[in-house]
Image (tube, rainbow, N blue to C red; front, side, top):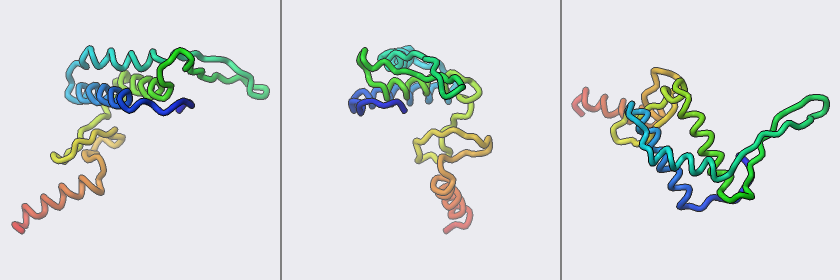
Length: 138
């Protein structure tokens, strides 16, 4: 995370809502709404980025420079950029799952394709306990 001021709470909520809308659309295999794309683009372009080549001893390395002098919030721009890179990679986006617990609203990245709960020890356990009580008639 690049250095910068804490984001405005309303801007943070706007970015969170845009990310949620994009993720929900991808999970449901539908189109991402244009206004959601516009919101993500707004946050990404609010703090321009440039890459610089620097010397690290005898080696070269690249570093990212966030131009916060143009306004915007560096941290929100970074989050929006990272999210856009993730969501635009179809292999990564295909790992997004909605928790199988109907009472849960969480979405997670299923690194294991068999995973169906956000947190197996919480939601998974609740579903298994409920299933046990239904079967046993308790």
